[in-house]
Length: 170
Image (cartoon, rainbow, N blue to C red):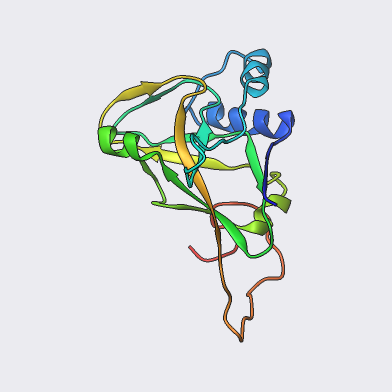
């Protein structure tokens, strides 16, 4: 059975520090990052009939219509063989604010869990208008789906390490 887990504090801090060094976010030090880390919530379904697991913001975010925002969620997922996690914005945020994932749909493969970054799920968000969300607000949902392979399946690589673009190509 699939399982959501928190990444280590060191991994979350590293991702937050990368945001800070790129000028995307500003944190007041390790203590603030630790408070955000300690408050991370594992994704949950809103109702028994919900297909998606809601992801919660680990810290407050101001979205603009100009600059995409990178969000390290502090979450990883251990998936069953033959499954993947599809991530999309929550539909209400897409409808109200034009919120989109920068890569349209996020695909978290089952082997991403074993990457050097602990399979840390991040989302890069763009919007059409300016708005704010606070710590713990739901912003994205993940749906666990099965996939099939073809009879003459022959993967390019035997293992992966990393996220965006890590398996090669553009």
